[in-house]
Length: 50
Image 1 (tube, rainbow, N blue to C red):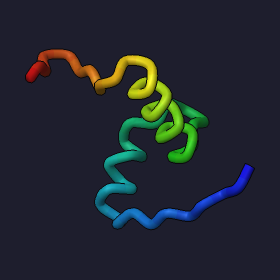
Image 2 (cartoon, rainbow, N blue to C red):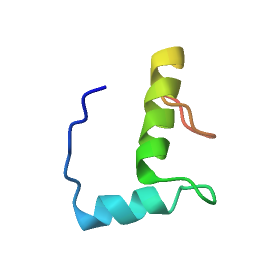
Image 3 (cartoon, rainbow, N blue to C red):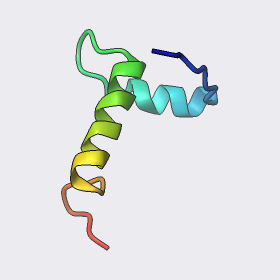
Image 4 (tube, rainbow, N blue to C red):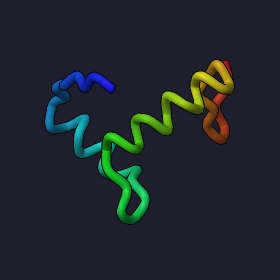
């Protein structure tokens, strides 16, 4: 697998950190988000609809 580095500003990084489960990395969290998006085609959140 080829790795690509992306840069996020410190505010976004802190926001991401706020959603991590114990022992989870930001990279794992982003991977999970992408998997959810690819499966459902949309991000779902309680109380949110378009």
